[in-house]
Structure formats: structure tokens, C-alpha cells
Length: 292
Figure 1: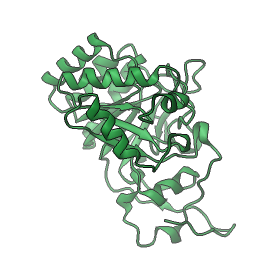
Figure 2: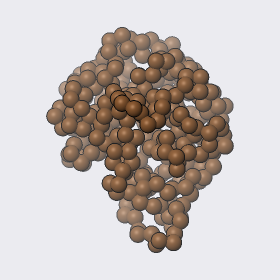
Figure 3: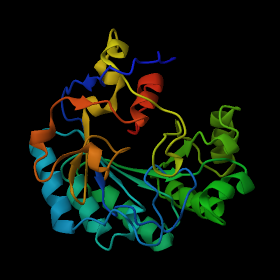
């Protein structure tokens, strides 16, 4: 979908809010053991600009979301498994809604895989694991995610598969990763060759935020929303929480301009301005960070 060039006097549209379907929890802020070139929040191992969340604060947000009827909970970062209380927090969420962890897989060793399988077996709701890997070629992937990331992610996928957890491989359409050149089929073949009997692949577009700030995007105006189903925009049914409060969506989590409230999730279930350049990518592609 091509965006018309908005006139200078136009203001950004506001996405109507429908209901709270998904809560995103940026549990480790921008603290991560990798430093991917395309990271939407510029995460890394040194001096995270967004702090990890306090465990009690996470439980409070999850509880409020449950009271508001949330249908899915997602833990992201940074790398969620760097949080010292990740497993207890995951157990807490799984008693309230289906829950997904977005991970680079590097910390899923045999004991962690066992712990996740045990947690899934006794949980009230379903557990999903999404493991990030951007190209089926080792060298191309590691040029994006760091040396050794390919092998460690693939080992995590095999460990989860062996325990019946059926992970979702998640890739970003990075230009250097031959995006669009049969990427889905090549990733699916990688999983099959790795012994994954029921391969699951999710591909996300590149967003102009974080380390890719300035690479495309633009304003979404009211005119551009005419005839568009609000469900196309994930900010119509999702909110993100991080250190500092509630943010409009997981892509913009932590950014001052996307902060909606310091302490109340209920207060943010209102229309949100589509003013960030990344909003145009959602409008053009209908992309959602959720599993579906």
C-alpha cells in the first residue's frame, strides 16, 4: 500500500481503541546479550537506556490487564531470560492468559528447556516461545545478530521441539538477509531439516525505529484511515508496559512520545495518535507483533 504525501498542515490520525487483546511486557527493558543491527529498541549488553522492570511492578500490570479482559500476554526485551525472576513471572502470567516469550534463544540450555516444559505442563493457559533468527544462512544471520547467534538459536529450537513446545521462528525482513527472496520457504526448510515436525514461521517488516531510525516511514493521516479496518493497526487492541509506564505499542515502548500513562493501564484504552514514522509501516503492511 502506497502512502500519499501528506501536506505540511495535516495532523496525524488517531487509531480508535477497540478492546485490550494483548499486553506487552518489556521485562528487561533494553538489556540484551546481543546487539542486533536492526533492533527496534537498540537493545544491547551495555548501559541499557531503558531499565529492566521490577518483578512486583510486572505482576501488578499483568493483574490489571487480566481484570480488563486481556486475551494474550507477551514478554519481550531486551532478552527476557536475562531477568532473574523470569520463570516466576511467566508462571504468574500463565495463570491469567495465554503467554508468549520473545527470545533470541541463546539462554535456553537443557535445564531452561526442562523448566519451560514443566511450566507449560502445569500452567492454566498455553505457553508459546518465539525464537529470533533472521536468515537460514549462518553467515548472513550472524552478520545481523552477532557471531554464534545462528547455532545457539537453532539449538534452542531443537531443545524446545524435543519437549513438545513447538517454537515459532521469528525473522525480520532485513535487506541484507535476502528479504522477500523466498525467505519464508527457506526458513521453513531450515526448521524441517532441524527436525521440527510442524514448522512455524513469522516474518516481520523492518521498522524505522531503534537502530533503523530514519530508514523510511512517515505520517498516517485521517484520510489514509478512511476505509481501513481498525483491526489492521495493533495499537487498536494492544498496549505495552515498561519501566516508566504504559506505551502505545511494543514497537514504540520506552519512547517518551509514545508514553500514555505512568501508572494506569485502564487510562490508556483510548485512541492513540499515529505520529511516529513506524506507524506508516503498520498502516502499509497490516503487520502485528502478535503471534497471529
